[in-house]
Image 1 (cartoon, rainbow, N blue to C red):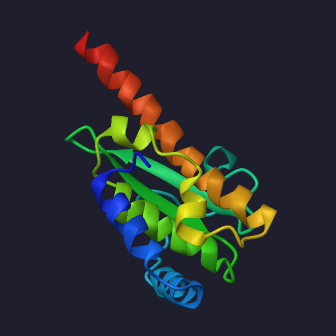
Image 2 (image 1 turned 45 degrees about the vertical axis):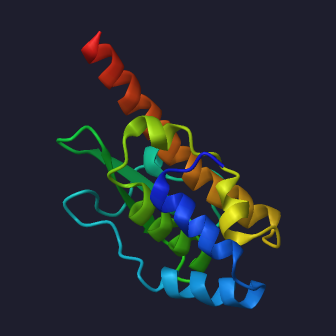
Length: 150
């Protein structure tokens, strides 16, 4: 799997749930979604933050913290974007504050580990796009840190 500890624990927990229990759990996770704060971004959001292939029009920001980790923020413009909102909460709660090199190694396949394989191709691609944006930001930060220490 290769997930940071908190994310690995979540994936292990989800594996124990039935399909309906998993759906109910992910809906409850989506209910915790909070929009990106105004001090990070305001509408209209820049295209450079838009998640490619996301049907819910999700956006992602990664703010570098003083401890050289990232704090993740998301906007989901589709009010019905429950899967995107759940993924945003999961990414933030389980990856914000992790070392950049750990985030950089997370695979888009985590979408299947969390949501199962029943999602439509469009939803899967959008959620993988969210993961890809996070890992891309982490790779940039990791490269900056490596360059500064060499």
